[in-house]
Length: 363
Ligand SMILES: *[C@@H]1O[C@H](CO)[C@@H](O)[C@H](O)[C@H]1NC(C)=O
Image 1 (tube, rainbow, N blue to C red):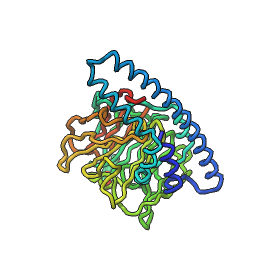
Image 2 (cartoon, helix red, strand yellow; image 1 turned 90 degrees about the vertical axis):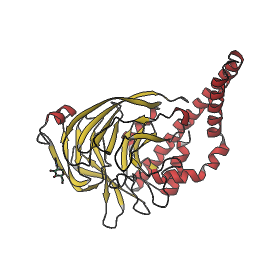
Image 3 (spheres, protein in one colour; image 1 turned 120 degrees about the vertical axis):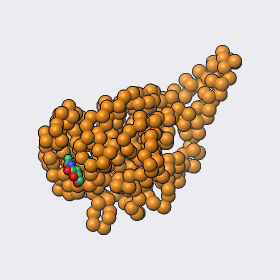
Image 4 (cartoon, rainbow, N blue to C red; image 1 turned 45 degrees about the vertical axis):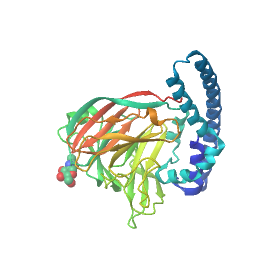
């Protein structure tokens, strides 16, 4: 429920990521914010009702399960947590934290992605079900991803370049000798870092301009043209993950929207809880950012920090997820919300991790 305030702050204080600049685009943005605000109010109301339900349940529990002190204890902690999150004072206190967030997380305007916000997403990762090593193509570092809508696969060799490879499906990709059965797409400008995202036949990539400003380019893969460019203000060049300095910023498309993860250098932190130090990659699932850590001498990658933009995940339920031992380290990890899979690039190997999910406790 704080996400609406968070976004309002993001928009007014940071002016972070707005695609396009014309008046009517601003108008559209305002309309969307308004709609979003209304939806959030509805959601808040629902939450309040759910809280009342919880409260009643709580007293019943207390009477019935006098012996089960541990469970009640836990429930009380959860109630405290929710109450702290919902009280107006908590919001006021969070003011400076919100400004922090806007340095790392923004939700750019994109109507196609925004419309999916209506289905409020309630899942959290509980583990890694399986690992599939698909093939090895390209350099030790790179990125690959699958468009959740078109099922097409996109391969970004190396950590920058002006072209990418497109395959019709994961199967086509895995059967192809090298990249021979792909279509090579030459882009109008160079992408920087393995932090792109593809969603609904649009490619979003980071472009660094001559004066080292960063832009997010929205490229229509069907018509082969740039449809939008957004500048975003970064005070300095700080990479998001200390173990993958080539990732200047990381884009992620998930069930709730398009996210942009980036860091600024005067703080070694990302959010109040997730340090950049030893971070390798991150991905967003249901509005929760999962940060993956490793060591400089690559060891086992693990999710060790997470941050939920809706404040709906409590730390006790946060899973400590270890990735199976692999060749090297992840250069990128891209989450596909339709399949609940991660597309990883590890020392030139393309890997698919299937995830298991559970419901968020507080929903
Ligand atoms: C990937 O990049 C490396 C280094 O530039 C190059 O040697 C290799 O041929 C590239 N592979 C593909 C599939 O483009």
